Length: 274
Ligand SMILES: [Zn+2]
Image 1: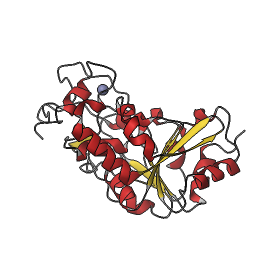
Image 2 (image 1 turned 120 degrees about the vertical axis):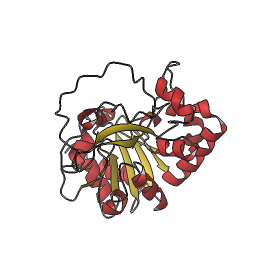
Image 3 (image 1 turned 180 degrees about the vertical axis):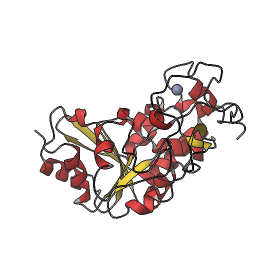
């Protein structure tokens, strides 16, 4: 059993106190239960004055098929492929209080959005959620046309990216590095707040991000809690280093699937029209 004091010690060892922290977590990585679950991890960060930021994406819940008149080329999609059946009524727009999160993100984001004081961004497919002293500052800048604003704000405030038992393929900030290296972000479709169908910015394939390990690894501080390896990176340096690495070798982000259309189109520069 992992106790809160173990998590508190890890946060101290990683020098995270009073910083905003982008958190990507696998609770399973601990190999045993945490006393109090995801809340205990969030509490350990909040107790040190951290603001916790996490992806709270809702692509499967609120994504729409591509309208015929909103189809940018080179957008990581084959528009002729059959559309996957959806379970939600497509007339319901995303709302910050919808209470839904992509289950593939794990337990922690779903726990965080339900806590008192948590705030959530206004992006119908790739919202971020945050809690702590700077939560509103980070989240308020997010919009359907500025998906990674919260990461930019976190980096400008000396923030860290904390991987708890997960790999670089989970590090959402690397999509911002792709953008800074000159790639346009892909567009997908969802209802805006007024119910209108619109295009929104989203990230590409992250399956190749572990190939940035040799350049990003030296930036990380590392601790082990139970069976969980934690790595904390300074966000600003991650963005600068990854942006330079991608600019120097565009193919470094390609995932192991040689036929991946997302990777092919992203490496080519992303959508050609908007
Ligand atoms: Zn790929």
